[in-house]
Image (cartoon, rainbow, N blue to C red; front, side, top):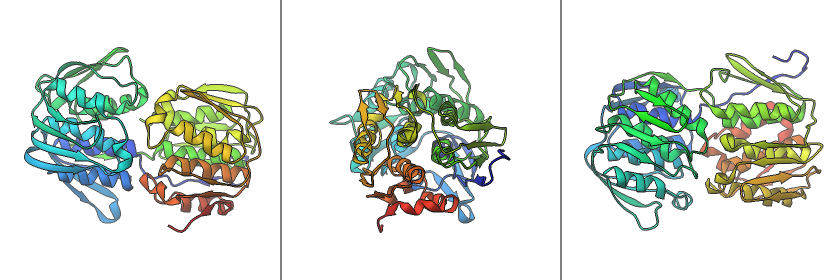
Length: 426
């Protein structure tokens, strides 16, 4: 990929969480058995898989989780009074209630304290409009859902906080009696909805789209085997590591045909001076260890990767401003504030606004990083420690298990200098 780089490294990135959990749901909604090859095995995907079994679906793992077989019935869950535990998985709390509402029964959804703090009101209001009975006090978990199928029809969903509300409704739409026509004008993170629609089409859904509207016709999904791509959001940390160390990092299986919008993070690295090559079967990034700053970038559509850029921005030669990320305040943590606080703990000057962050150049000082049970904080600051050579202590290194339990081991394999990060005993 970069033959001039003397030390190219190939990163072993696990499957996409976004693709794994969407495919689990679509396979569950199809009549028959679908096989998911190379699914992500992490806390979030296992929570999603378990929640499906709470709803009465059957998911069987192959040897060493090389594949998962999902057996669906072609309809929503029926004749059940189920308790569905979502753990920390936001996708479970947002994708599974619409699916359950197309069935028949009563369902209590709940999750961890962290997930209970994340908003669900727009989704729950939409389900009520479509005919489900929802009992909630705060518009968050826990809530009770009583279902007798959904008619569907036209709906406007406030998706300014999360695109997952709309993705969940769209995936359930073929099971609604009249399908669904949704207003898409207030949507954040449109690439994630586009990913949802692309997968729905693979499973046989009929979808019509425009800039303002998305229409899903009623019908049936079909069982479909699917190979899960490596996770583009997780790959961002390894691409950034290549840019700040001067080594080429290649991620096979993540290329120009990817369904994941977060692969566009490599375009941001190119703006910062990295060399980028995207081919059909792989993407490679390398740099000379120096980053170019002095630019503004809107990362609203790839907000899961803004923290990667913010964490390495102190190593640039001029300030970097990241915009369009206000909805990141409603993720596993307030991610704008969390990045600002932790970078300041490292002695870096940071200025923040409601939906933006400016990071100034500077040499980080040793610091203890507050991970806030947010995997992306731990992963991002691991790259800063690597690029700066400054020891940073993660107060919760194990939180990476949410999406990549082997993250620290893979970083050490590729970059042994990552031992400068002090990982507390878990």
